Amino acid sequence: MLNLAAHERITYRITIDASKCNGCNNCTTACPVNASYDSEEDIDPENDDRVIAIKNGVAVVINPFRCDGDGVCMIVCPMDCITIEFIPLDEYEDVPLQKSKKK
Ligand code: SF4
Ligand code: SF4
Image (tube, rainbow, N blue to C red; front, side, top):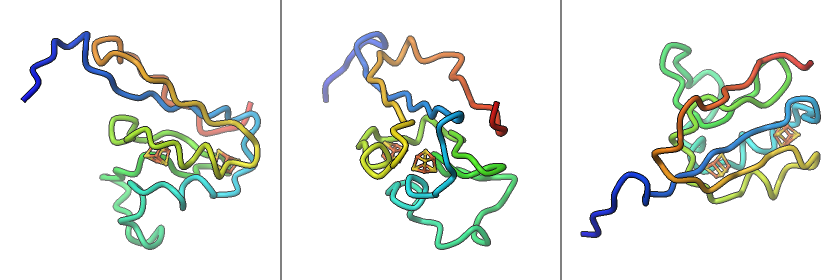
């Protein structure tokens, strides 16, 4: 097994520009990590481990570490407001969880 130092490991950082998001839900329904949830009723509010979700009418990142970086959400977004960066794991700090309101 490849034994990489922390700075050599790559992860992903997904960000969503809430000011452009129209809340269409395309990204949340297309995300394969979210797919284990059939509906909002399946979600335990205390343990919501979706990557992205709609809160107060816009998409927000909830659990960025679950994102596998496949980019499906970017493809289906009609507003071009999702960005995925490939970054070293040891630089992955202070993940900017988004405000749940439009600015
Ligand atoms: S990149 Fe893939 S896993 Fe990450 S939020 Fe988008 S669809 Fe989900
Ligand atoms: S697909 Fe784009 S516009 Fe639609 S909810 Fe997701 S981020 Fe917002």
